[in-house]
Length: 470
Image 1 (spheres, helix red, strand yellow):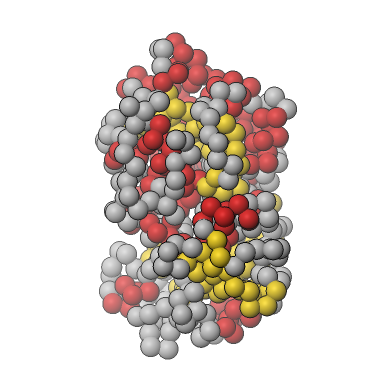
Image 2 (image 1 turned 135 degrees about the vertical axis):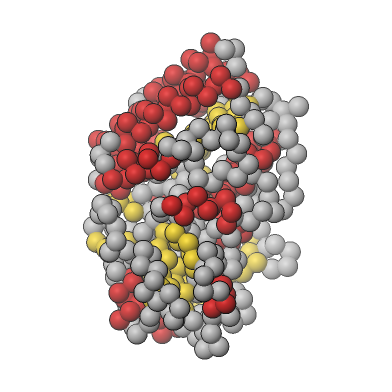
């Protein structure tokens, strides 16, 4: 048997690690401190690329990187299906809107979700919910309403309060696993900036919810047998300038498929632009032989160079003719790949695209995380590799510089903050749980096996995370 009988997983969507840590350190999160940190552990953890809602939930719920779940972004394009099936519903996707209900169908089926591992479950305001029963999805019919209210109004505080009420009410069902999403931090950051008073109030509102939750569990005698976890999928940074990556591609002469106007080049596109979180995008470029294969980095090097002439673009990466990840920035150029034994190799072509100093040529995956953890690009090498493993990934992955995003049109209301990129402020997230862990360097993908171990379940083979407890 495990140490706990149930788990309540609180997703503080968009919470920055530094803000969370500062609030916790100065006593502004007293309930998080009392019920989690003092009993257990606070760590900074590395999320995934793209660092955006949906794909960045996959590590928690499936123990897999998003590329290996074939969920490469909140928007994607399937090059092979686009060329073969004109009316296939799987040619492209945007989870912003009604297609969000298709996420569970789109994601790979080879790993069970935590909902499937714990049939007595609850999901609140969460799209990635395969395995949740009819009675377990507490916002099945209200999710669109809450999402629209959160996105298009200045009343996300009311949504978070409603989520809290649903969470407390769900305790009567005694679920084994509960996954609950609070949207306020993310929404108010997008509308304002990550340090705005409404954003800070959203952190404090989560703390209030933890206090009510803790008291309710104490009253039922279940507090000590409930694993409590608070974490985030990504951080955000303030955006001062928008780069129209769609118009950039069109000016280069491409007929670019994009959302929301997917009918403009419904049949004859030779490129596609799929932005996630607004600070990264997948660029798809038709090969000389057609959409049947992925263009190599060398074949589209002119596009890479034109991108890097832009002040908004930080990192561009794609697969070279040998299947290795080729990475380029204004700082330098390098190659990275995994060998047959699972070791990561890193070879600089000239200088270093990330500004890494003294980075080894060959590392296991723990060493990769350790050597990069305190840099401006934590775990960036593995994150690029995993994302490009997806058949739905673009020819080029483009990550924006801080202060910029890659989407100038069709964003209502205008986003004043962005996420999705590879740099530290977007990809490092807080992790707080009411049990001790010893591991210093943590990925969010490690939480899935940790939950299973602590609740006495068998950890499936083939996942990307490792348990944080013995």
